[in-house]
Length: 494
Image 1: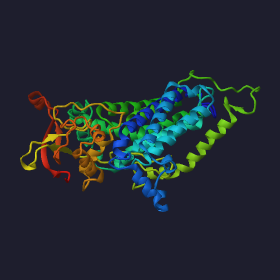
Image 2: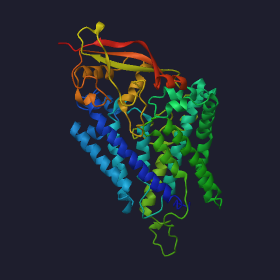
Image 3: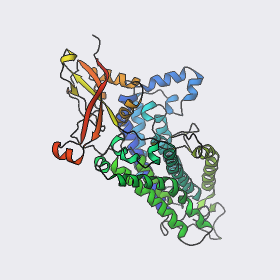
Image 4: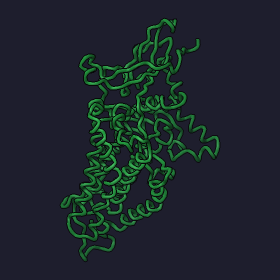
């Protein structure tokens, strides 16, 4: 680092800008494919009804986060146009095209992504109530001020990325250490690989590893989240201590974060949470010799400071001051006895509090949805609807979907954890009874090939991974046993 210019972090900037933009492509694509059947004009939780409610009173309006659809009436066509524009802009940033111009060009592009995606998450209700939604928004906002290829990355913005990774990792570590006993007695990962929301192809193999290995996983997690994040700030010491040591310490800390996230990527499906954490961790990896050195010649005009236009320097420093103000409450939250998880302290979702899996469920309960075309439900032959990501067929290998986000499958995992069925699930069952084509496209398989079932019901099952001996005998990945009826049988009224 050299004052206002983070001269050794050009490689970090390239990874941050292109990586965050790539994940915006995924986020907008996920929305394009799923928002309309989930939240569109005829969705399970229609966004137009939410917007109408917020227009009914000032108090309700204050609860709604910023969204373009407050000023422009929501339609499914406009949602498609917004997602398409987001994908095009993000793809251009991945290709590095806006970065070839002045810093204002990539800034406007990233702010467009930030504002456009916030317009979606603000009306996304429970289907967008995940921590990685606010994480990509905050990352996109900060990426807007990384500048372009014309000047070195601003030091203040690089440091703000370290602060984001610190809140993300240290916050998650503190949530765990304060959470369930399983994190303190080192048994959490004896259950997690099996009971996580959406297992991946290697989750069963990870679950079957020895108990001593799982204890080591938890210890490694605590080290990576509670100790390592402090060393991300080591490169700042390079401003005062000459030599490569501060930069090396920061890079090693970032490498540990990346390694732990890669393990989570290969053993689970957490949308883009782990992927964006990997991208953000690169902010602490300085590589000397990449990018132009800042100009410090006496002949430089006064509006050029450390190779950056003075106006751009003012803008980035203003962002730093803004974050200094906004960070007080999340800093308090990190050390509060009642720590909030995935919480925002302002309407713009900046300087948020993060964290996940403070407790780990010990058994996996799945809601299985079945239908039949028989008239008598008591003597009927029931056929199962198959979801794309959540367990169903006990012989099927779980698939890798992340960083793509299957929103319906994720909420199906949360369903057994609640005390009652949620409203969206009731509407979902009605849409199955009506053989609604957009809803059926959210599933992996419709057992009735578009025909309307006469009855639909929901039954809970306990799932567990097969042992190696069981797999050799049956070839199944899961063992399941039926627990109880959850809903139905229900039918549409004539």
